[in-house]
Amino acid sequence: MIAAKLGAIFFSMILVNNYVLVKFLGICPFLGVSKQLSSAVGMAVAVTVVMAMATAVTWPLQQLLERFDLVYLQTIAFILVIAVLVQLLELFLKKFIPPLYVALGVYLPLITTNCAVLGVTILNIDEGYSYIESLVCAVGAGIGFLLAMVLFSGVRRRVEDANPPKCMEGLPITLIAAAITALSFTGFGGIVENIFGV
Amino acid sequence: MNQKLSIVWNGILKENPSLRLVLGTCPTLAVTTLAVNGLGMGLAATFVLICSGAAVSALRNVIPSKVRLPAYITIIAAFVTLLMMLVKAYLPALNSALGVYLPLIVVNCIILGRAEMFASKNKVFDSALDGLGMGLGFTLTLVLMGSIREILGSGTFFGLDLHIPMDPMTVFITPPGGFFVFGILMGLAVLLENHTGHRIERRSSCEGCPSAGVCGGEEGQA
Image (cartoon, rainbow over the protein chains, first blue to last red):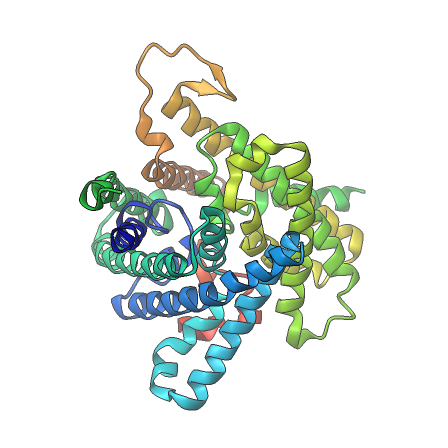
């Protein structure tokens, strides 16, 4: 039962409630860093790691805030925790795992103000998930982000070669391409509920 | 006086945050399924823009430049918290309509961007005016997007039934419809620019992000 519930959360975060294409969180990196597959993957992996870490820290923090009747400080506390966490992760990677720093480090500073990270921590609280569920949800959201980035970087390569009307060149046609990519994800509606019976 | 007016006007048209500077894309796409939600989101962001612009400007000589990003985020988060309390108390319907996007105003890059681009270099009153202009430009775009999506997707306008003699095209109130309408609107904006000869290059994400200078993202892109 628990496994089914966790599975349902995980796969619905990837397919049905995809953060980028359905919930519109993290659109900036989605449009900006998806030009090349390698940078798209790097960014998405960095986001996944930070999302999981941020959730691991903010969930207990929320319990603390509730205990002391400080829930109104949620937004400030969460964003500061995320900012500190990203800085720490960056320093840690730089010092101890340089190859990983080279691969992911450049994306880390951009993640502090990425709404997908703050979004996942707040949504986990709003949904009333337990600690494990929150972590699964965060990792699922990250992998959903990765899937959207990888798929879209493929679409993007075709779009770059296309020859749209002059006024649609660049960002406008990219947005239309994103619309079609998002349309394909609406086909997943209901699929997770049917598989896991939740 | 004219100069003050032009600061406000600048945000509405010349540097329209959504369609020209391409900032704050997430809320632009997410909340505009109804025109009234667009209006609510726009006004909420305007409130935070004016207050945080004034506060950042007032503190611009106190904040050391090395820690200015966290300082700005804290200032903005404080005003967003204030706003959330007000909305929860007086406009509970708007609170549930905007949901998580209300606290996410903290990371809306329009606000951080204007703090870095304008408020950190200008006087308090001018910064507040800049916030007002930017906010109004953002609000207008959101209401426009919301109107188009609501009319086409639900056949209503601000909740009023328009009695359009055809079935509403539901796809416009779904996420793909959001991307589509935003793409078309931006295309129209570019078309207009081509006619008037004020074409600017649009850049998405960090390349064009005004806060790239503070977070070091610029090198990350290259």
